[in-house]
Image (cartoon, rainbow, N blue to C red; front, side, top):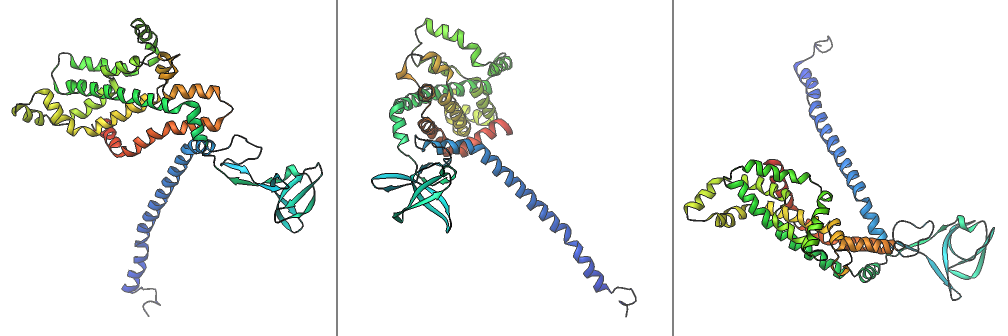
Length: 365
């Protein structure tokens, strides 16, 4: 009776109020799911767009030399049927009984002759223009493009030259950067701040500005035509590498240095036994930075190694090969994929340490 008179019972009020209390929680969960799904979709689209050129290059690298009109982007060859000692292309032909896959034996302007691969003894006359039909394609990657490109470009020699230049340059760049960064981060040097500022300012100096005077200097001492201009400068430090390593070294507590000095360790021993074991993440990151730079460097090898094909790295060799064989895009892309294989493998193997070194040196500190 209390309910009928408009006065709700306590149980009824509690039941009514318990329903909307769960709505904010539900809406918050839905908003979270919607946000997560939107971000995931956006990231997937971004990665897809970013990787589309690489996917197209991979598909083109295993395509055949002959490219016909209407051929799909994936590696394919026209499907054919052998009849009377000859091969004929297959087409999807619309007939009264439905779509059938037939071989075109006698093309005509308004009428053509086809044969059914299942029953080739009875030719089929089809009225219409055969060029409007859809040709049948088979998935057939041409893996032979890779050994052919390897042989034509002498890729083995290019690969050896590039690895040698990159590895030797990385050793020089990292070792010199470690020593210079250690000095800037641990020793009291008069005018240290000014010197470090000048060093960092050289980062904004483009290579194209200094290429003429450095070329004149190396030409005067007879280094042009050798690897020395590509290797020796890296043994004198790089501002970018020094900056990254200095930032990391400054994050290491000085108490460890003092403890090593009390035990009788020299500054060099402190660097080897205390600093370096804790800085492997930053050192590996710097190694990868310089290795990728040396692997992709094109201007310096082109200037200093002109006329010396036996010393060319991959970047210069691929540029020459691309200019000479523009009519063979499948071999050009096969060479490009082979050139990317080692850097991609190195980044995948050292990805965790590389990201850790970049974050610590560039963000947290």
